[in-house]
Length: 518
Image 1 (cartoon, rainbow, N blue to C red):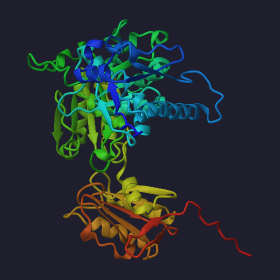
Image 2: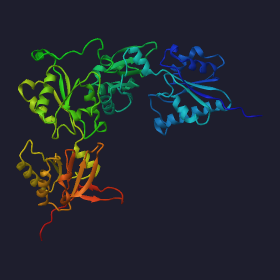
Image 3: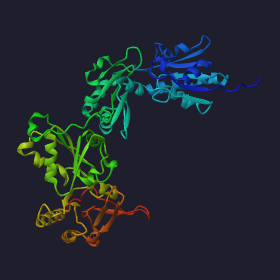
Image 4: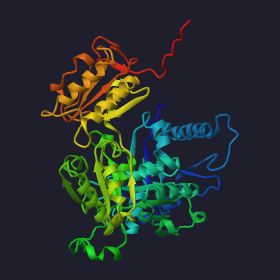
């Protein structure tokens, strides 16, 4: 007797719940299959089966794949994961027996079979062994958006889909960084999800959808939802900000200065973009930039921030920090959410000080101001070189625009005598290089000529160049506005780990014990 040709495996998405949202292909496959398999909890009820019920035949072979554990505990020696792995392996072999007998098997699942679907566990175990087709279905994400009548994303917005089972801090970071989001698998995770939405500043935007397109559907504002009433089949939706912008008239004008006291106070958030582009932004900074109505900053730094519809950008020259700070605070007094954009970290030779100085004055004392940290140029340059700032270090700006050179020289000398590693900001420009030469000479009075100096230019940018030179060989003519210098201490070491590799620089964490005389 000849062996029958193996049957075909189908993973069939049935859509979010309403049987009328099954695709024509899904109906065809379920109707024609020999075996229909579906997952269920121990109570035996299967949402997938209830969606497809009208298309099941009396002669269908039904395979109920009943989970051994869902929210309870298990005595399996491998714990929950061990129990589930064994379960999926056993289910796969049950289906393989039908396929080996030449039967067509349709594994049905709500939503889409490869989107958080149980079918994927069968797919991983069987698709390489048998002919397989996956029939996509309408996801619960699309259903929730449709039932809310709220677009998820528009234009260049980014949609992030998250399982509510992530740790609350991870949820917070991802919600803060994205434009729009959907959080799946609520139920017991709802309190943590709500906390993450609140901590990320997204709670006011968040909507709640329960059993979209099914009996018992419920929608509303997530902040108003009773945690004890939330089932597993519910999602949180943070919809598109762009789609919410008005299109039937001009944007609302700013209130006049004389009306500022009658206007709800906005906020100023001072953010750092890091040393270069988007890879250096923190999730918190991304969220603040996305939420702002106005962006204020030096034009070069503003150009690092993606354009978003509905935002107004106010670029200016790099030498008007005080005016820029007052302008931002004035916008906030008139009810605007303002992000002041700095490079690096806003608190390191950047805009945070200028904003806080202005905010200490009478007209702006009531304006909320937050400062969000960013990756500093010193830390970025140090990381590229290794760990030259691995022990005590000082950060000094060589620019004498805001303080006399005599003060700079005193601080360089004090830091050199203390044997601190140094991060030197603003070392010079094409037309201002004498400070670098003076600093080098001051340091040579207390440091070995062989002291390693990390010469870092345009870290993170297209012109990045990081190399190590001897202190005695530091050439002021090579320094420009995009350069940062890190001068090692007496303990700083360098090594070339392979012949073709650049030198790695580090300063040991342990400092030698002082020697005592006999």
